[in-house]
Length: 223
Image 1 (cartoon, rainbow, N blue to C red):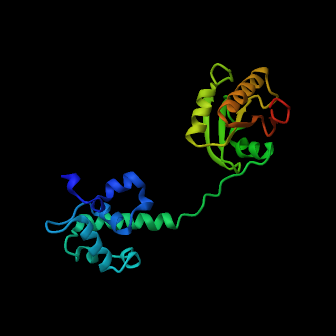
Image 2: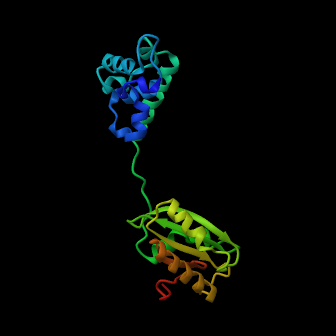
Image 3: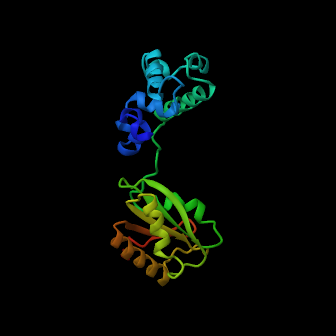
């Protein structure tokens, strides 16, 4: 019965209760191994494996042949261990993503200009930013004539919350090439700004894209 098993021999439960950072190397190995042998628990097998390779330094480069040479570790366990160790190596060597930073309306316009200025329909997009004004994600929210009843704040801020965004920048294009904001553009902007204030995600700007021209509603005083 599970209640008869010492807590130290229940690494899965400890991970769920405390999180992976609180587990020892032996406990993490035991979770990967999944089960022990007929004569020893998975924790004992994990300890024996760890001691055989004298720690993680040699274990991380162990081959399938070296792993299966240890009693109690067959090909399935060996392959699972190798896959986990390889993932660990790849994560360790990941390079930070070079995210685009928006410091001004020009930066925001430049980020979307070449793509949006040639569109034949209006596209309403949002850029979701972190606290450093780096672009976390870009998403098209709506395609068609801008209308406050269609561009609903719910759709905009749902994605912002999902992405843990600190702020957003909205942009849409005018296929005519003239970026002069309409009254509907201004209305949508103010509505989104008010909703953003209520939930703590600031609308930094709404940029209207024309043909190699743009208008920032922030600069125009509508935000």
